[in-house]
Length: 340
Ligand SMILES: NC(=O)c1ccc[n+]([C@@H]2O[C@H](COP(=O)([O-])OP(=O)(O)OC[C@H]3O[C@@H](n4cnc5c(N)ncnc54)[C@H](O)[C@@H]3O)[C@@H](O)[C@H]2O)c1
Image 1: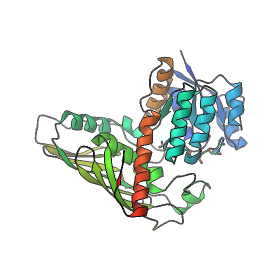
Image 2 (image 1 turned 30 degrees about the horizontal axis):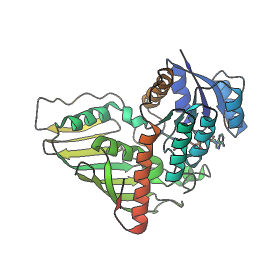
Image 3 (image 1 turned 45 degrees about the horizontal axis):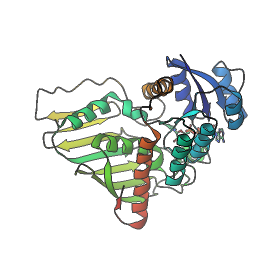
């Protein structure tokens, strides 16, 4: 059995989704849409489709679609998720889920009312190193964690921000170094540690001509009692590995885009596992193996076929956007902000 996939938005990230759909055992591409006809046409023809759409509603009306991947600018996700849901089509939505609490709640409500599933992309959760570290944390073998930090030092130049009108805007990008790039690492840190309780942040626009932040530092209190720091930027030339470090009473570990960097445990019988996959390389651009998207597309197809929840639900993805929104509120008010 195959699930019929369509995409709305034929931009940069569509390459990963199209590759994943092509290679997923339980998915097949049936339709594509972009408001820019040349983009939709090119993607359709390259993927063996003789038809393409420039209007998402028309595509949803005319085609038999099980899952629609929402790949439009971040602040449009709500509009397109709700449109798909109204046509009783399940959705897999790119990160961030959307950029305001109200819109994210609307998306979840829309999917619930129409009885469709909403999955969300955070492909780094499928990285072998991240999975091993999370298992270690949960098993208690690193002991009581006191310090956990994330170094999210990307590089995007002015050309990148000028390349599309939505980039670096509050309305459609929802923020800068944290809401667009850093959200991957913020989601990772929270996922590894079992949730974030509060944040106290400073955000600044120091390098690029954009309305949103390009640099941020955040003091974090975790639900498990530990504290930590998040550093995020899109101005660290030429873009560094994203690195996560956790320090517990029985050991220290750190890992990044290309595997495990530190594995120092009191219990020497726990050997450092070999990690072969990559989270995307130094600048986390488009040079990864696409393993994460491939797994998430196959998981979404199976979620529909087996009538179960996807690996990362909309509710789960919303939590990470809420952390970023709390960071922005803290930077604006100068106060520590507590998450629910
Ligand atoms: N998971 C990841 O690592 C990752 C990486 C890159 C981007 N993303 C996310 O994917 C989303 C898209 O990013 P991108 O870099 O591909 O952007 P992009 O600008 O390259 O592509 C967006 C596309 O959506 C199209 N579009 C806009 N409005 C539309 C509409 N009403 N109907 C149909 N098409 C419409 C645009 O014409 C464009 O082709 C963003 O939310 C971004 O955060 C995720």
